[in-house]
Length: 193
Ligand SMILES: C[S@@+](CC[C@H](N)C(=O)[O-])C[C@H]1O[C@@H](n2cnc3c(N)ncnc32)[C@H](O)[C@@H]1O
Image (cartoon, rainbow, N blue to C red; front, side, top):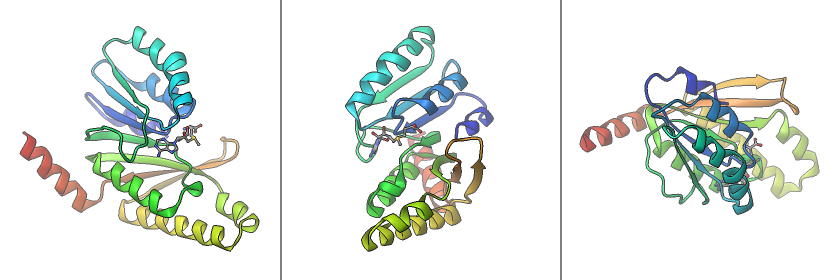
């Protein structure tokens, strides 16, 4: 989930969406260097307080040259300004309404640098397991989520990695900015310059 960060040279801007109690956060922090910027967006106030106290506060005290900011807000309207080189997303999309999943990906791609990557994951076979115990509306929703994921991976040159060592096994998806979005982001960057 965090391996793209190491491939970027120079100063990096990283966004984590839905850090929860911080398993990916800790891996991201280990990769950051002086001059990097790391924003996190978490909707749950309890997790925000825990993250700040246990992970982010102590990290900032030891690494004053890395900018780390936690936004306790939903990604849909958190006050963020891109572009980010890597966006690590831990949201459980199989539990989300399809419309919300689409709008969250729209927001993440709007915040992504032209050569950046959005990385997200799901547990392997989650829809196969959930399908039989869902009602017909639930199954229709899972199908729409599957379709949105496939469309995103087609449009954004998606790379898939099955992680059997995780329990339960998980699939990490790595998506690039779409070509048209890359051009728009490059124009915006040129205008800003
Ligand atoms: C499944 S947890 C993932 C936590 C962690 N990344 C992990 O793998 O253990 C998803 C987290 O996303 C947060 N979340 C859900 N919807 C969100 C939203 N719209 N914006 C930001 N965070 C959200 C939840 O509060 C929760 O902490």
